[in-house]
Length: 356
Image (cartoon, rainbow, N blue to C red):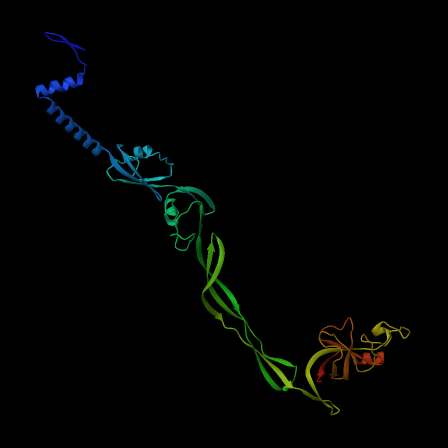
């Protein structure tokens, strides 16, 4: 720019802002403008500070500090890039207006399986304990019900919660009371012989049970009370202690026991054994000894083979033979002839097992 004076033209570099400042100084207006600008800056700074808020976002162990001009919780979470799932819990709520120093807590929903009442459901929950989850889902837990894990246990992802419904009822039933067997010595009775003095009789009792069910199945039955209707009657039995016997010939011997048995008779012939004199086993017992008077055929389960015996109405014998028809409490006594066997016939005898 060229400035003209009265005498000459002087070349000066043009600086409009400086010229304006100079002009303001000459007019006395510069200082008020500066003061006004500073006041405006202070006001704007105050407004900035007033409308900007310090917010703390807490998610588990993570803490995020955010400064924001946003007005509600939802907006500041969006500003922080935090995405929410439909079951997540935000406290305070998303539409809550922000205030300076506000803390926003985010609880993430985790999957939980509940098995109860014959069904299984899968849910997403932000509850802290098993009890809170079940209450939140409307499950009523009765005092006797079983909950696994424990109601106060903390929830963890993919936890399985089981509810077992426990009920009970009282049932009345009867049961028999067994009688006792009382044994008494009888010193006039032979050893091995027993005699019933009083028959035993079972008693009867009414029992009340508490029957416990888990999910409808009986698991335990507890006795609550017992009431005797009929007392049992003991069975009283005498047993002999006499261990010596004197025959009609004044022969006295000791025995270990005595048996009441049914005795029959046989000989070596075909009618008794099915063998004739020409048979190589004719007259030979099952133990291999020759059959003769004093040989007794027995059931080895009752009288062991080789046992020495005394049979009333027959005499001394030894258990040395067996027979297909000789079973249980029966003895078959050898006679030399078929006629003698027939004369002996069938009779009740006492068989004394001789002491060693």
